[in-house]
Each structure stands twice: as structure tokens, then as C-alpha cells.
Length: 161
Image (cartoon, rainbow, N blue to C red; front, side, top):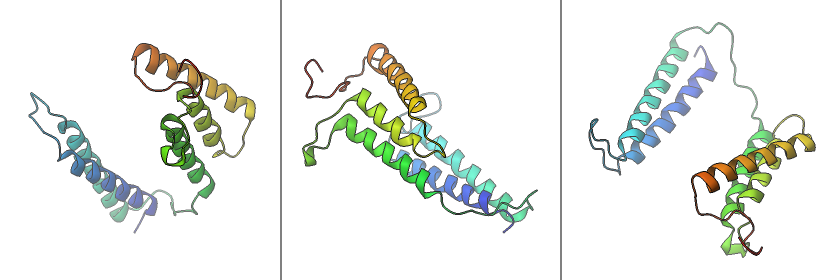
């Protein structure tokens, strides 16, 4: 194999594209003039899988300009990003099985931002707080005020949530 990074990236694209395509088969397809809910995910999945196949073929057959060996796993960033997303989900919906109430959108965004910032090589509290504040304000504006989505914004145990 000439380029292992591109080969595995293509394999990942094929896997994700195939999963999207397979999941879209449960929905009505419709036609190109009158698309159903499964049309776009199926099309996206097929295109992603085809892109992955082309990447894998190119990586296997053609010599890369430079050697791209797969390096060691970046465990710290990977775990920080996964933990940030799990905490965000738990903050939005709570954990009823553990009797933890929902903390709401604002607290969830702050948790997400602070934990995700730990994935970087350096962590500055001031920068993370500024980013979290901007994200919380923009999310509140977009999802609550403009789109009028109904979900907890503040912790459920606070009055007026």
C-alpha cells in the first residue's frame, strides 16, 4: 500500500457513507422531482461511499508525494471531545436513571466548551470562558429566539425555566 492515511480515510468514508445509505432505506425515497425524507441521506451516503472508494483505490495504486504513515492515537483529544459531547447531551436532557436533572442549554454549552478545550495542547481559562459565552449567546439567539425551539435553557430546578 502506497499511502496508508488516505487508505484508512477512504475506508472510514465508505463506512459512514454505507451507514447513511442503509439508514436512509427505511424512509420513503420519492423521486428527484418530489423528494422523500430518505432521498437526500441516500444520495449523500452513496456519494460519500464512492468518494471513499476512490480515495482507497488511489491510495493503494499511486505513490504519494510524501510518506504518510499512521501515527500513534491521540487519546487525550479523542477522549476530551467524546466526553464533551456526552456531557452536553446529559446537560440538555439530564440523566433520569441517576436522578440528575437537566441543566439546560447554557450550562451544557459551557460544559461542552470547557471540556472540549482540554483537547488542545494548551488550555487558557479566559479564552475558553470567552468562547463559551459567545457560543451560549449565539445558540440562545438562534435556537430559542429565532427558531423558537422548546427545550430547557436553564437548569430545571431554577424558577422560571
